[in-house]
Length: 152
Image (cartoon, rainbow, N blue to C red; front, side, top):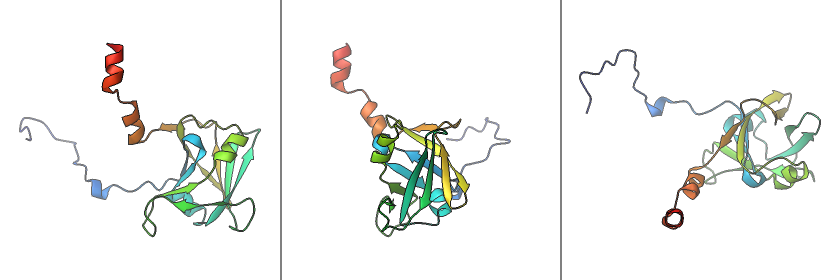
């Protein structure tokens, strides 16, 4: 199917097996408040079993630090997916945290994080925060026969 007339000078063929996995630490605040750490963030925290969540109201910033799971303020960190697998996403239940501090969770947003000592800082006002959607969300937004018929 290759067109012999097409000039391929300067093009590289993408090999997905050689693409590096994202190692830049990020945090996603999912819809309804779940916090999602990518592998880079989880490793930057030292692969903790639990974390504490802190909030600076004036700066609108979140801090996450490792915690002893027995501490009353600690939130358990769990790998997403199969147990014992090599997860690339780690989840922290944050619904009560986001609700308490009025953090918008109507859409999922991914933020870059900054490491400060043992903590990760997330500036909720940062430029470049990305709204993220899952393939399931896209399926929910797809028109159905009923919705198309109702418009017609």
